[in-house]
Amino acid sequence: MEREHFNSRIGMLLAMVGSAVGLGNIWRFPYLVGEYGGAAFIIVYLFFVVVFAVPIMLAEFTIGRRSQTNAYRAFGKLAPGTGWKWLGILPVICPVMILAFYNVVGGWSIHYLIKSFTFTHGADRAVLGEMFDNYVTSVGIPIIETIIFILLTAFVVKGGVKSGIEKCGKIMMPVLFIIILGLAIWVAFLPGAGEGILFLFKPDFSKISGDMCLAALGQSFFSLSVGMGAMLTYSSFVPKSENLMSSSAKVAVSDFFFAILASCAVMPAAFSFNVDPGQGPGLVFETLPFIFSQMHAGPVIAALFFFSVVIAALTSTVSLFEVGVNYFIEEFGITRRRAVIIECLILAVLSAVCSLSCGIWGDFKILGNNVFDTFDKFTSNIAMPLGGLMTCLFVGWKMKKPDVRDELTNGGSIASNVRIYPVIYFLVRYIAPVGIIAIIIANFL
Ligand code: PHE
Image 1 (cartoon, rainbow, N blue to C red):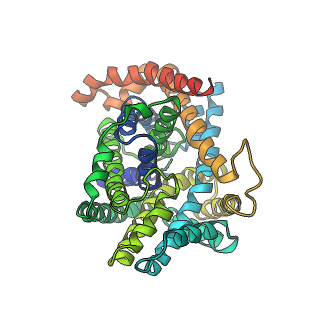
Image 2: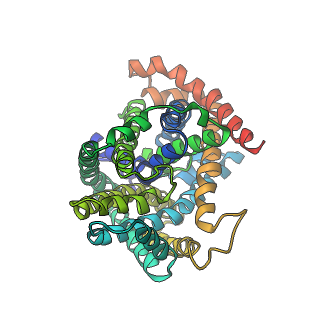
Image 3: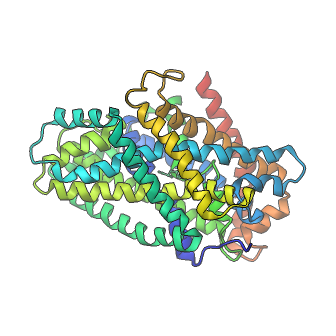
């Protein structure tokens, strides 16, 4: 069967940016910035993006486009008869683990989107906090909403690469951009917003620590969707004529831009209403609803905001979902429709477990974390850095040098890429692996 490819360059880029821009930008980035000293975190994060995450993305692009197959088979196809084929297991397991908890947050976003019109003016902060606690710890509704979110993702992926994934990115990403930009501009005019912007851009270097570095590293991988096969899978649909280096730069810049824009929408609003921005994961679901409830236009702003969270999450889950679907289609020879159904069933079970672990199953802990947090921490702090590390080692040390060069410079035909190529290769071969190992070790000391 002929392998599907993206139809247009803009469609391909928007699908990739859609994968990168997600809850990581709107939900996680702002609270990490709040927790780890504002601009100090942003600087460390940016450094990791340039030195580690982008080279890893390029390594994944190289493997994906060269192998023209799913993430599981790609390693074995490029290094036949070697133990490297076992690396393919990581992209089969990791996306499912991410989806398990990510879908739950997607479900929460749907809930808050529906609820946004009830954030009545002047609601009590404690009441809204309690509402969130009661909601996430309950049994039925969060699971139903999570399943609705899974079905939305499945609907897009069922359409295939061109009419599902590409189309979804092309429609959703501009809408997302307009909403977040609008919100950021609107927030900038709130009284006291300047302080929040100052906090975002004023570095507190005393907050730099091993812990912060691992958080920044994990976030850079998570936000750019690298280290677990999503970008690898997407790049296997990229036509040979595309410039991989310029695509990776565009994805990285857009992702960073979205993260900053989302922080500009969230942080100054928090300052303006005197709430602590370093409050952690509850920022979006507890703090913001309180802020919305203080505004006259609150319900409308809340609806726009949570709608943007749902869209951002959806374009990311689509890329994670496709990794598994592509695997099932190619490895088991089944139809896309069937692959989508199987993946839905697996995810419904795992996500339900994650959802319940926030409530009645909360006492079951793995190393002090419930299942939801275990999946979150394990994927971003261990599996993705490890996946990134192995991907770099594979491209830097196992693949034939001319093959890598050929992919990244389109056979030497793109002069600027030929010039930058030695730097990228050096980063992939030495700097990224050594850096990742150093940070992982530093964290165990
Ligand atoms: N990059 C997405 C985000 O920031 C999450 C994601 C991770 C998507 C890995 C795909 C693969 O929310």
